[in-house]
Amino acid sequence: MIDSHAHTDFKEFDDDREEVIKRFFEGGGEKIINVGCDLKSSVRSYELAKNNENIFASAGIHPHDADTVDKNSLRKIEELVQHYKVIAVGEIGLDYFRNLSPQEKQIEAFRLQLELADNHKMPLIIHCRDAYNDLIDILKSYQTNSWRGVIHCFGGSQKIAEEFLELGFYIGFTGTITYYKDKSKLGNEPEIYRVIKNMPLNKILIETDCPYLAPVPERGKRNEPLFVRYVAEKVAHIRNVDFKEIEKATSENAIRLFNLEK
Image (cartoon, rainbow, N blue to C red; front, side, top):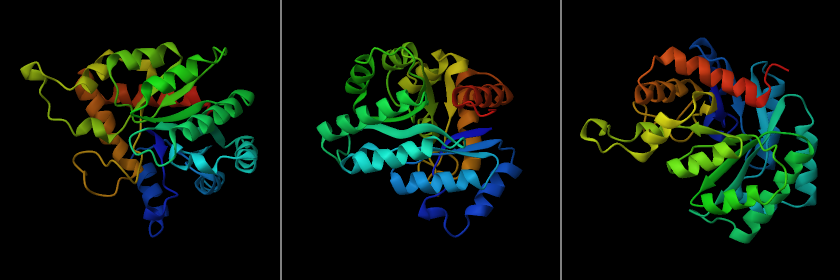
């Protein structure tokens, strides 16, 4: 298993970070991608990756902190992404649900970081909430056909998923997919189940977003990388395939997307 989106650098793990990481690897985990979401967490993620062979990092500034994106912060992100253990630009994107930064500033920060990623031929880790149409329009506005990355914690429709696939993106699923009651026998299954069923297997990633979004049966607790197993199990259940098939495919997908064997 690869947890392709974790935040084990966050303060919620200050008391037992090494134990949490050890549990993941002893429990069958293969690699962790620790995702930066502002300048400080990007540096912490890099430090974690530098000191752990099977942890990799990303560097980027989340839309909540779009107001902090300036020449100085971009220069520091650019310095980080040149290290071989920093394998993506992210977590970047748009969040119109909470709107902690003005939408126009979010768009500006997103564009600047897209251009940084393109300059360095880096994959993207994209956060998007209540802003799929604007985000897709921005991606399509560039002439490049070389976008690659993952749409983190996807919660959109089949149509939106197909648009991202056409743009070259992978789709990441978190513990939120375990929160729905399984109504498929009644012919009223959640839209996200249909997305998962129709998703090309070679485009699926599994994520925890820990310490948030703990999956059932751990919902309400602090999330941790080991719980990515429950996400894989749910994807396998929805697609009616063996867990091992999902485990193998999602690991291969993460390795391919982020070039983890370089």
